[in-house]
Image (cartoon, rainbow, N blue to C red; front, side):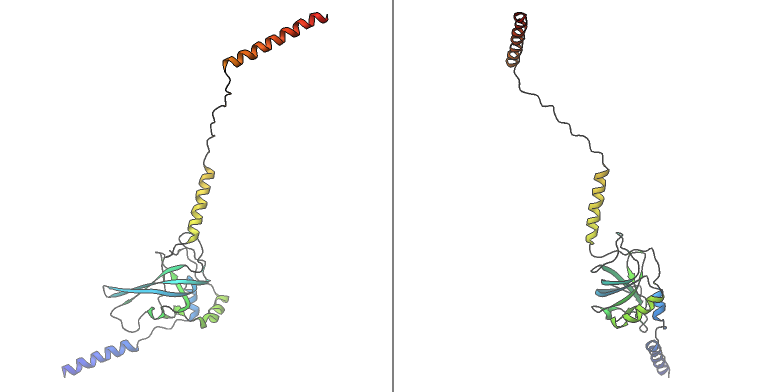
Length: 219
């Protein structure tokens, strides 16, 4: 009898977990509570477990920013090809309902994201990932509401080419602000010898003597 009671308890426990579902949150609310909406694809999903919590992460490659004035840590807006780190977690002890975005790996869709303080993004609800077919509905919602404003910035996983350009500009500004010392050039001295100078002096003296004598003859 005791064994039968235990078996029934286990069956009921699993039944409860399997039939549990996520609380329904409308797409309108999800949009309002999002910091960034992009079309992108999740890649390179990995997972590890610590203290009965499954930690998962991957990278979302951005194809298009739909809404959200979010900038990178370098101060640039997101653009096509940017890779951002995406993280989520779930308790190991909870089988159902369970947050797991690994099924969305390598599938292009619409992500309703929240930006975290460490520069990563998260999506703590299954319907924060939507198929491209839902894009028209999301655009309708965005006509009457806006995503949440945040001062958080996103740290890119791939190198941003604009970072190099920006550094070059900063270096140019630094050079312009520096005081440039005048270049000192040595005076150019002619290669005249002492004998040449003496000949010029005698020639000048003789010419002066001839002119001086000519003045008395004319008179």
